[in-house]
View (cartoon, rainbow, N blue to C red):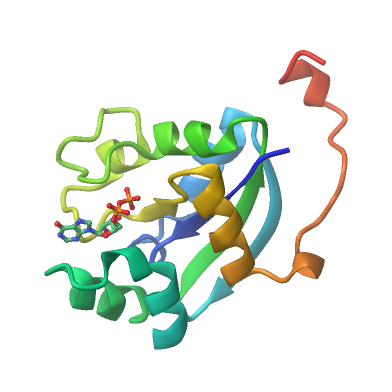
Length: 150
Ligand code: IDP
């Protein structure tokens, strides 16, 4: 089963959007298997956003993500990376479709509320950065056959 890392970034926590964002993902039908609130330190921020090092917005991004607590989660489903990216909407909320998290709740690329891994490979890397294996729960939901055809 595919997993993805989702972060409600500091702006989402400060604006009281944690419940709204989790609710949208839950309603989609995907499965929550890990969740915690945390303050990201400089080292983790640099590792998580390493691919953007050198870009003009990098320092602002690191300062922002370390500025205040965030909520980190792992969600599970077949093709969950693609499903979550669709529910989040495009990176820049200005261009994100209505009905998506960013398209409904945001206006600015540097305050786009939520992170979701962009490929199954980065999901594996990011899940391991934020969570220990023991923090990820394995459980059954008895309504799964009503969400996904067995
Ligand atoms: P993603 O979050 O949709 O995967 P990425 O391109 O991986 O988008 O960028 C990571 C994060 O960096 C974005 O979510 C956004 O917060 C920030 N970011 C990306 N491009 C810009 C920019 O041009 N200005 C300010 N922040 C940016």
